[in-house]
Image (cartoon, rainbow, N blue to C red; front, side, top):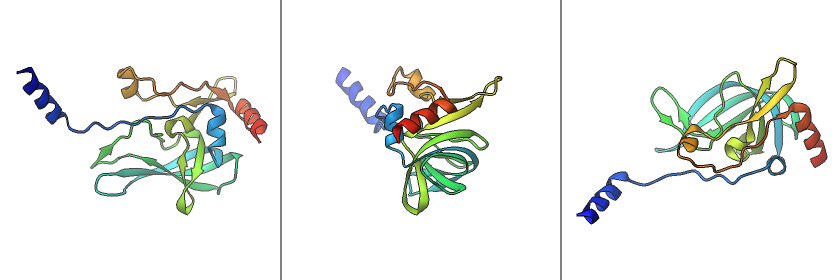
Length: 172
């Protein structure tokens, strides 16, 4: 009887899909990125890649190039999308928000479209403190991974923009 129950459970659960991230420290993010930029996300749109896969295309405005060069406005593509018709979330993917000021670690793809290096690890929020200092906060692991007790990547520590610029100048 136990074997039959196990077989039914296996048949009903279907395939398991997961995202595994390779932990990157700051130097690995910098080395693996063609561009590091402080930017503002101005628009998001979903695009269907094929019958099963969606991506989000983020239109971004360059505020300050920190490494490499890119145009005043540029596009970043991330896996997954949310629309009125579909909600396809990809664990570990950077989730950009309209109006957010961010520091992005990017690799260049075809047609001058960029991808976030190290998935969510290459997406840092810019927060302004009361003393005027900008704090760069790496995106925390998603709630689903935290609730499942998985720690796939060691969290990077927040920095000020000045500290990041110092580390970038040492890497050059």
